Image (cartoon, rainbow, N blue to C red; front, side, top):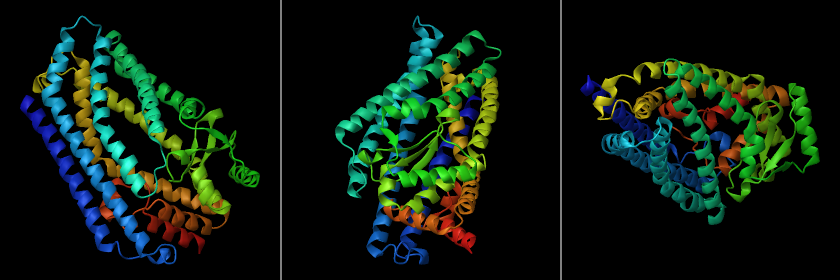
Length: 415
């Protein structure tokens, strides 16, 4: 049985590597094959030089992601077969409470993963993004962001892990249920706190200065039957020239946020169409549906983990002391990670469906598809988007329909 568990893990692990590599090469080959063809809808918007820059940017990002995945996979194997038995054994021999052992265990693993990812983040930020004219961040700001992220992550993960381990230790027969209750409430709390606490640690938010645009947005919200406390602009331009707009928060902390880069590069009509799309997500209750799905899925997963994490065969297979249930949780998470990868097309397909619905709502609210089409063209050009993704790559990964598909669907809506 122990051998079967190891074989299952290796099949999932190697299968994930192979399929991920195939998808990437399919996407890159498809882009190189069609990358010199300017789509009809982009004629006059981009030229040959811009299109080639889009291709180069996509390929370089893909290669960097592939290298990072390789390092992460190698680190996962090293932890599993070399570090895990040693670390769990040493912690089991220490005179520490079970919760303390778990915090050290996951702290070490998180530190290793974080350190391994820093070189790739540095290269992406200060080499790749700078090369293509996106990065505006300074070293001081990057280091400040890193420090704040580490502190916040440590606090939040410490709370979650401490609660989970306390439930396991003190309520061994029903910990999965109480953990589910706690995680659900904690997630809702973070969604509520993020706009008014966490986000303010990284950026400056202020009411948008364009009064005319503010009135138009307020009118659009009223037409959709939605209310928001305030419409903010955020100083993301100090980090990157990429553009974005989004809704955040729940209840009284719900708000609209516009990147300062978006305000500077798009017309008022385009901005309104982008926000109308986001309103479409609210009208269709996509966020609530996702939250409900995550809550239901987490209950099923936790109950399943409850039954398998106590199986001695799981620990024997990887040479881990059986009492170390925190190590068992880590082992189970590795299986779920690979299984979740192969289930990606399901969630991606649902998200693409949501995006199409939101686009239709945007057209209904604004009465025309033309500003959204114009905005998508500008976003594609400004962000050097891939105009020729491989259909299989889209099916497996994309949470949004490809830009050409979205534009053509909007053109049909306009007619």
